[in-house]
Image 1 (cartoon, helix red, strand yellow):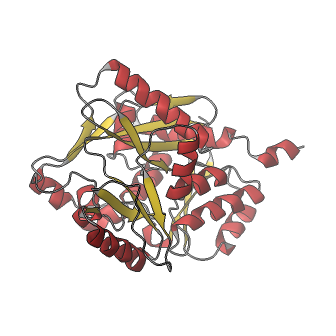
Image 2 (tube, helix red, strand yellow):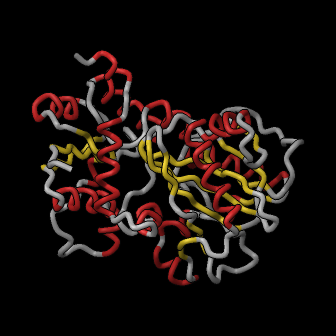
Image 3 (cartoon, helix red, strand yellow):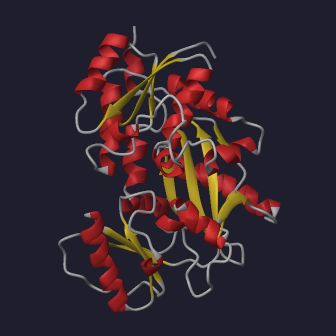
Length: 344
């Protein structure tokens, strides 16, 4: 790929330094993804400018107008602290007729709203756990059609925010307490779904029209006590000390029958298309002992850090990290946004 002017848009608190020297592991963890992307794009010969964004698009508009980047590398996961507002930033880029990486506004809207996405997946007959929505501000009413144990999480937040061992509930009293906790702590509606016991599998997807899936990756819960449900809590996902204590890790799923691998790939592509996603995504599944599969979530613009699951699964099929970033850039440059229909 020829060198490009790349404007990397990220949260203002996550603008990375030029070097890791002098920083602790905890400090680096905060902006590891941003550092990996910016540093490797520079190493590949691109002219890169990071731009921190919090609650204003003025600086973004000015940077586009003055510097004229050939593409915006989108690393935003929120706007003004609101996860579902990242779609509006991408919509703004489309209004500016500015190419960008990652998912389009419609795909972000549909996948970020977990209740809406599950309704769409159910319509397309894609297996997902039975579920119910509990909006903030409404009186709690026990769902009669759901079977305990149940899993309670935010209907919009990502990165396992609000998810802990207490998220798996086994009676109506615990369910109401956890729903109220989600309402108060995340300021969002609660999504309650039947808890699926089994293996937790992730499948990376790359593409716009023609899609590529990566080999299934698995979350292995190590020596986590059997009395605790094997779920990807916030500590399990992001606390490396907790991971080391219990031997929690992720790696390429072992001993999966070829038919299951094929079904995971086909389901991931169906989900991607049903939710109108583009760029890249990660699909989260649970697989029971009998091989039945259930999609838990579709994650647009998953973590792109060099050592995270998405990049690791790409490496397993000989796509290096630098090549992966190049593909993400190329997909962004070639995405057929509506405004391209009116180009001279």
